[in-house]
Length: 185
Ligand code: ZN
Image 1 (cartoon, rainbow, N blue to C red):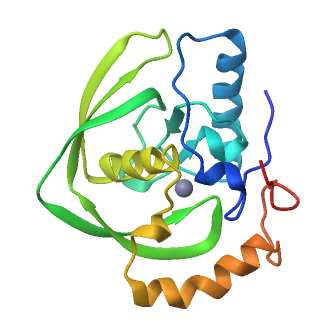
Image 2 (tube, protein in one colour):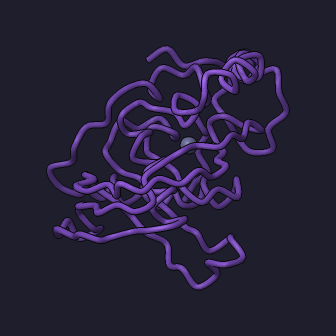
């Protein structure tokens, strides 16, 4: 297993759409293990493959670091597709390992239904609400090249622009490995 450098805001791959897998190879299994190790090392609760430089349609979630979710098992989502969003929306503060030290409230549907493949490449479907729904939606957005900062109100967006520029230029201290400079491909 290995801790991989996390791609940061400004790295082009984070704006790319992920590619679906047609099968799971040993290399993919390795990638997923590394994604968990990278996420846990950075105290994250979710991580998408493009956050470690892969264009595959995979994200992982582990809510267990959160006080109220200690018994939650790690989850893997391959080729995810959200098939239902609730009408009701809720606002909650979010952060992102690719946008260190920036936090903002994001309004999202309260619950969702999602289809995906599991680690054995079998079809799965779950409903998620509360924090799990939020983290899934955040990671799902990554696979479409979308950041949580794209979804916040324009005023807050303006306020955090200097922070985003600092991240792009690596003028910040981050206590987990990240790409050394903006990655253009
Ligand atoms: Zn994120």
